[in-house]
Image 1 (cartoon, rainbow, N blue to C red):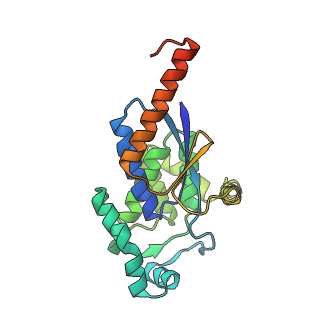
Image 2: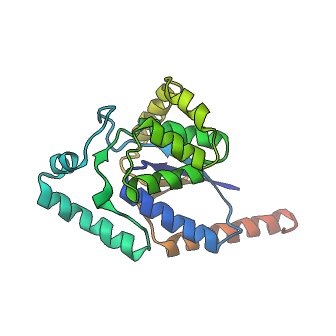
Image 3: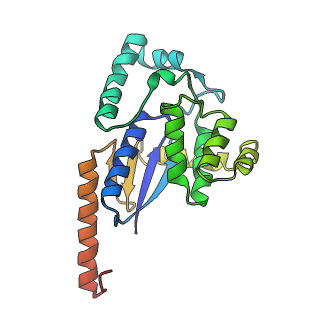
Length: 222
């Protein structure tokens, strides 16, 4: 298997679009070699723990409502082109995502990261739920097959919070400055929400190289 590390934030629309495209490419290549691991990257590391009003956040970030609307037009267009369901009007608050990243981390211990990430994106971008709220996170986790009560107990503590923060800072120190960022085999960086065809080509190239290596080493092909 080839390790595919993904640096992402569950309130990043391009991460949502990028994951949808990658998932489609993986579905079309069921024998793909990737083993996917999700990593924390907070778009707003200084966000208050309680989050803030979405409209206020966007206007402050982009310099007014008109500029905020303009900034999100490419998101709306690319989501539509990729068949990604998105309902920006449903989003009322922009959350602090540290606890969401903690849940993603715990999901990884149970091999449920992909399901949890999917549900977080849907909860935020489609249902307009505040994924900074512990009850929402517990519901998301339970829906992905995790123990909701255990997640609630962990969220009520500081379990793994310092570790997740350190991983976020480490990614930034190594050059990750936007998300999504994909790291293939700890060597090749692929930034942004890449087209489906690019991922299909990457998978085909890696598979061909693995097959060639097997032939050279004398290992029978499976």
